[in-house]
Image (cartoon, rainbow, N blue to C red):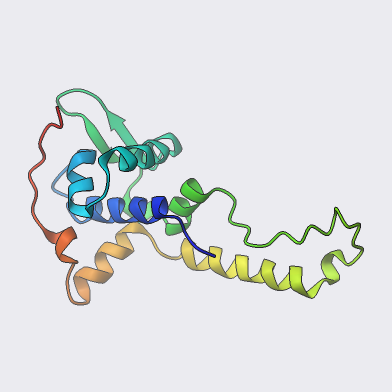
Length: 154
């Protein structure tokens, strides 16, 4: 299974935001610049995150994006679910073939177990865990640690 670039951008953006707790609002242009990605594309990703409640968006002089939930409450599973949707990695098509194996199918059972393990691993790591792990184990990546001034994108 391969996670899309949108999901990677979402994780990186939230990681960046959590590493700057002194900043309450972030502009997409700022985050896109440090990630070296398209601001237009990242804006679409952040809009998805805002619709899900992971982020809040605000217009005006104090505009931009802020966390809708604390970084401790946002798991990698939450982010992947918003960006990727259904996390099923296998669909055997057995119903179309009128397969009678159902729960007895080793292939289906194996993929179902793999999906469960993946879900469990992703639920076990929060955005705050990313930040704290890197702070305590060699430091934040340069692109995350860099100081940037919040500027109005207008």
